[in-house]
Amino acid sequence: MSSVSPPPDTVTFCADLVRSHDFPRYAATLFAPAAERRALLALYAFNVEIVRVRDQVSQPLPGEIRFQWWTDLFSGLVHGSAEGNPVAAELLRAVRDFGLPVEPLSLLVDEHQFDLYNDPMPTLTALEGYLAATSSALFGLAARIMGAPADAAEHLARHAGLAQGIVQIIANLPRDAAHRQLFLPQQVLAGHGCNMEDVFAGKATPNLRAVLEQLAGEAQQHLTTAMSLLAEVPASVRPAFLPLSQVRADLKRLSQPGRNPFTPQPTSRLRTLWTLWRASRSREFTK
Image 1 (spheres, rainbow, N blue to C red):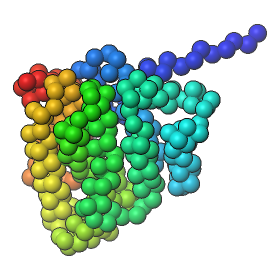
Image 2 (tube, one colour; image 1 turned 180 degrees about the vertical axis):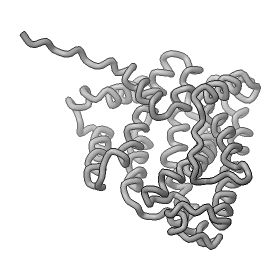
Image 3 (spheres, rainbow, N blue to C red; image 1 turned 135 degrees about the vertical axis):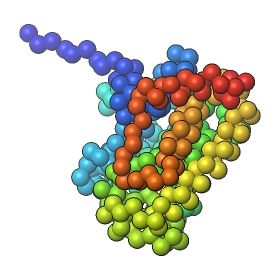
Image 4 (tube, one colour; image 1 turned 45 degrees about the horizontal axis):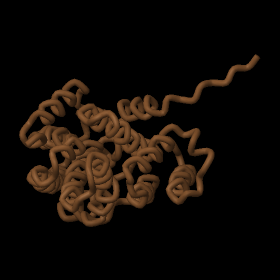
């Protein structure tokens, strides 16, 4: 006698996915009310699914097919199969319950197609466009979940995403260089006389350090602007921006003099929790 397996617990599935692959965002959801937390986890689980595609395929075409499934979902072309995908099911619920626009979700998928190829990032402007459609979009959607949409929150989300995205690019340099993929803009590399092949070879040249110093400066400017804008959004919305406290800590760590940019320096989960807990009780995020 065959037994039918029970449907997966979609909430737990999304929580486990985010906790395993994006712990800072997972930890930030712990400071949100239950209903909003469920929607945030759905949003972040969706992002994890998209970001992980490049590590799960060996050729661009399978990745393009996976991305197309999500694009079709947001276009209303996927029906029954969406119910069997716990991340899609939870995301669609969040879209319905919180009135989230699907256009930013679809654009996020489109932008991550860049990840499937080893094309270099051409300019700083192109990098900012990529991050605005990915990291900034996540902050903007999270802010909508936590409260009504507002221009102030969107402005804050843009700078928050640019700061976070640039810091992640600096942190991910060892992995990206090993795969001969660079998100460091060619324009900035050329401006400092940095050879791309030296980066792929893992050479921590003075030229590369100058590139990373410039990018860290860009991230700091966006972070400073974002933190100054926190006061312009309601306190109820600010938990969506708690990951900025981790961005601040990561930027400080990655900017240490003499640091080898090719040596991974992951932050422990305990330290991440401590950083976010302290921020959640600070005047920046509560007053």
